[in-house]
Image (tube, rainbow, N blue to C red):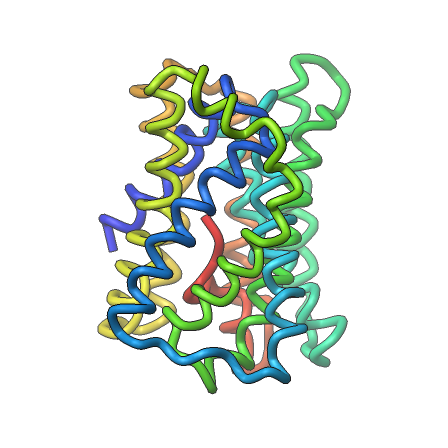
Length: 293
């Protein structure tokens, strides 16, 4: 699981490196063209089945949330928000998952659960203020929080599909569906690739190969051999990994206020995960296979 922490943590600095050259739309499309191509090659080799026709509409909805919504908002947000701060904000995703479960699946939050939600959002607000550099919210940070919410929608939507499809099948369908919708960013992409420095294009390709495919495969492998709660606990290390890699790769040094807000936000997430849900379905708050990175 340590490999997953490093691979998924590296996604945020890679986005920061690529979005400094590519527009967010071009970056997301290029990343998922790479991922789609690799997954298509795998599908041909293993003769992967096609999805049931009745599932296609909801697969597109899942792709709209987990690929188009999550990745586009995150890439736009990281034009301003540092990679480390973005990783801290995105880790509020389990909070949104719990709230969605409470609203649509009839799950109840305990008092400690609601306290954890409030603490997590307070921490996210501190990070947003730190990124603004003044006593005001940074709008770009709100985009990153929106991406966390979109990722939570994706997490909730995927659960019924995983009873009928293997994880790699589901991810393939979602990635292909999302890539089709991202084709709206196609105009100008060829010229952007032609004029971009190799380091930016390399970061985009890395995003398509490593966090989007290798990280997912490693996560699924770990989940098949370890309890879900133990696997989920590793996910809280991703911001630390992202902060370290962003420091080495991009030279980003987080402020003490950003770190403090991140710690408070993650504390709220831990409270919700451990004591927030009185039913056995509290596992909904845990990261699940296919969580977008």
